[in-house]
Image (cartoon, rainbow, N blue to C red; front, top):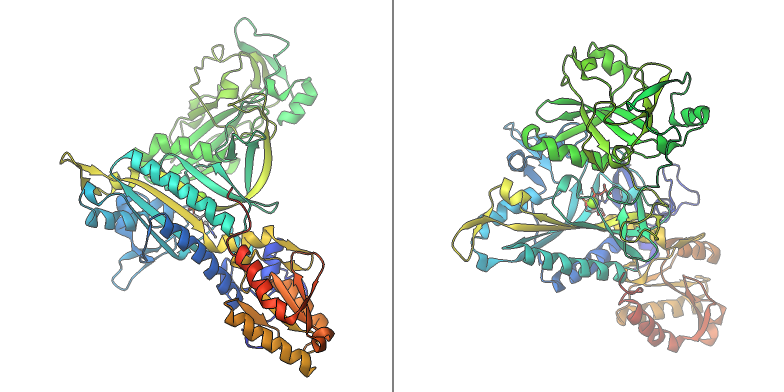
Length: 610
Ligand code: ATP
Ligand code: MG
């Protein structure tokens, strides 16, 4: 390919729309253009990268015995109604684009394909003899993300590889899951990415075990918590840990445990209360009031209790709520804080926010118009385990000192609601501490179990002759996100430094002075020879100054640059490695064999598997 034919438009300055390095560079180097928030055109250079990533993914999926397929993107609503996910994906904060056809039938644009594939499997796979099966596709997905950002990192239209496996028993599922884990590690290593596997939340997809693959990068949206011995790593959404020890309350439990009234005017926050009263935040329990809305219309007020130094993990809360209500009330649509305005709209009296205690009576909800007239009370272990604590007195400007659960007449059933924090001790070895790093989720593998096959009645005949729902796994890779994550990990002040296996071209040939016929001719000759040797080569045949061509070359990030300059007359040229190091002075005749050898090694992937 010749640069003059490439429709190349590079930008000198960072575009205002981009915040992180990889997004800026892909825009500046002419790889992508934004059409609308979260919707990008992949220009020819980007498409070459995406095809190379897809090829690596394809080779590893094929090697693991998966079959490539291509499923419809327009998905009938009734499939999603059968799995119970239509409302959750279309109402409230649901991310599925949906539409009606001319006959008024509803469809969704595929954000994921469990429903479609489970329906097909139920039709096609009748006997245990046909199992296991693993099907994959590489295709555009649509998700109406609440906050599309960072270019291809969080698009509303993006390319995903998704695979789904079907099994006769759990053991076979676990085997496929382990094979996919291995395939994923090879894929990321072959693409030149440093990726780590972490325990993950299964989210709206559901199921039991799940693991994410994170490309470590400062700009990552996910927080990873890991122990330095390498034995534990999890997404913060999912992470568990030992909380810091609580400092015992000096006052000790009062005889009644009902607490002594403490005047605390202007101490509505944990910080100001602790400063004003000389308390430690581990001695305080705090109360958060929220409202959970479900598909059935149920609006359930929540009274959440955590120790004063702890933060709520909203993912754990959502999982807890789904576990309790999903069967009777359908999907959880949203959880929002109970605001004074919301209370007023329900015809309820104002509440003393900042001075609330876990003993707040359900009576405050009695007149509610649409809400359940009682709280669902959820108490985190850190709060439930305190023998004696300080809490709000449910009246403005006052707290209770030395209260206990029994003294307040409460018997909390505790659960894990807290967000694990960097510095927390690890469960597997309390001498280990959690350390934080940031990551970009490029892949996610799940053991779905029988959730979808049961809901959609997708069954096979077992060896014993009975009908049973399939065991299922699903396995995703964000192909377009992965390509940008590679830029996030591999760039410098001058531009992109593509890992060779996914670079749009492997070699860039630049005649320093295109007007010089000797340089021009040698460049053309090398270009032809490299092409002939099966190398992906780009020739900068523009009549630009050498400086402009070198700058663009750095920005584009092609791994090898061959500079044909003044030495051309003597049959010599320079070979430059984009990742750095001194240019090599070579005889023209040496170049092709030398490059073919280097590139041959690099094509296998730059990093050992994670
Ligand atoms: P996230 O937590 O980042 O929203 P997810 O957990 O919803 O992602 P999955 O359903 O696990 O995503 O999808 C599989 C893979 O697809 C993800 O691991 C990620 O690499 C990619 N992906 C998901 N959403 C997007 C998006 N909006 N833009 C680009 N890639 C995405
Ligand atoms: Mg995920």
